Length: 336
Image 1: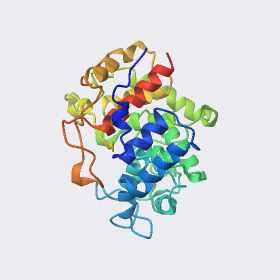
Image 2: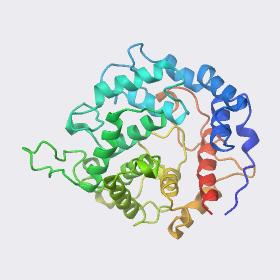
Image 3: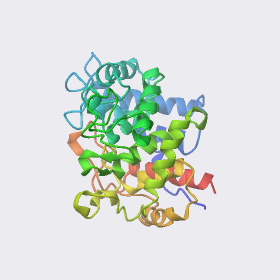
């Protein structure tokens, strides 16, 4: 499968330091010591959108208000760390990033080993733990608490060693949000949640195979089975009352928080080695059909002033979305 990156020169324009850095790193694969890449990275960190997010951080290591950082959306600590990870930041780039990740662990990591919105076992949910495991990993965090969070996340998928929500005397059990194995979610009427599953699977996909325990591999197998039990291009995953899929599935955006789109689903499945699976054919066609004549993709979903920074105008060709797509297409091309 061959793709042409007609829009690559556009992504490499020096006027957009954040996109330029990631395009050089992720599409062209420049060596980390290449002076061009190092300069681009330096500009992104010091003058680009990464700098903007860091400038809004409280010196103690949080954004907006102290605590676990889930609210308010989408400028508090959780969302700021997710955004930084999607912008290509790393804890080695600026001491404030490391401080922020330490602050997050100290305020959101529960005694059982989960990443939560209240630092208690009851405060986790698939989309949150998937997003934060992914973000912290992408930020370059090396911490045994993150290793434990990945293992706990896998355990919540498989159900191994976790008691039922009704066994309230058990120290390790499911709760009202994360209420059962196989991505069952209280917020989705105790049905499996595809949005949460995709966040979890994308996080697992970033772990090197040598770092995946048997438990994590079991969770990945379950996730693949669930996501491919439905046509990803139709997104008819379980919903409360069997209502129509959320229309945001078909809107490609940036940044990507707890809302998920078909592109992110294909990214997770492709990263895990399923790019050649015929069940992805319709979704890949859908993605390709969205590009314009110049090989660009539109920003169809955005957070605007709800988050830090400006990432483009709605329904206009967008560098961040185009970068997201080209990274997925590059992975597809490399496995063919």
